[in-house]
Image 1 (cartoon, helix red, strand yellow):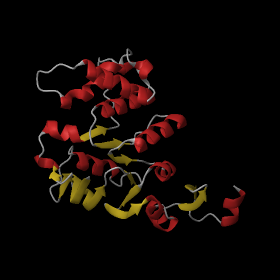
Image 2 (tube, one colour; image 1 turned 120 degrees about the vertical axis):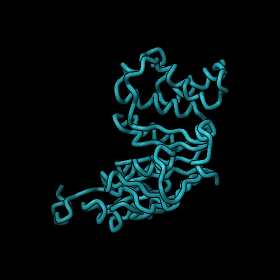
Image 3 (cartoon, helix red, strand yellow; image 1 turned 60 degrees about the vertical axis):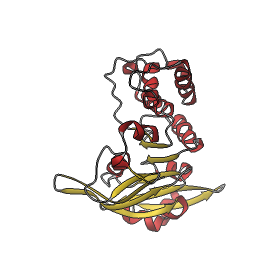
Length: 261
């Protein structure tokens, strides 16, 4: 479990996150949603320690994150960020193998078992055929899948992802998020697409105006009455075959025009 209590962050004099508290529970996918600039990525960075709040604290399974040694933190937290490091000279296989680092001692070399784990993780994201390719030569979508494979190779108990569907086509958006749902870990994911959040998240935190506008199950948070004031757009919620689908329209558009569209 990851728990943040009263964390804050500001860039210069501009507060982005102010006194926010969230809980990501074991075996569930927590989605961080909200408009651009609402602090989703900033909050995610606070949750994995890339940023340190001057107030409150973040704990991982009850231990304060700030006190964990780097290697121990890496055994617990695997992170996939949007920056891809495309300048590296590593091959895809070599990059994914880096995920095994937290499980090795300082001078220990990777074993056959480590290589097998890395290969299985590449296969899980549909990128086994890319192993010998130079990472720098991959497309944005291919890089994203490889970075997720590296995180899986880390075999951490918590997985945090910043917009993991970025650069992916529709098929791989769904395949990656379905994979995330099947992992026996605590997952936190930043998503812009509310319909993807509806399909693959168990819980949601809606950010707006520097704080938490709503938090709860996906069913509770994806309520037009909750979402519309935060996003400033009209939202119609449909439920088909037990799944939530959201339709969007200008907030002042008459209902008959929406029906015609």
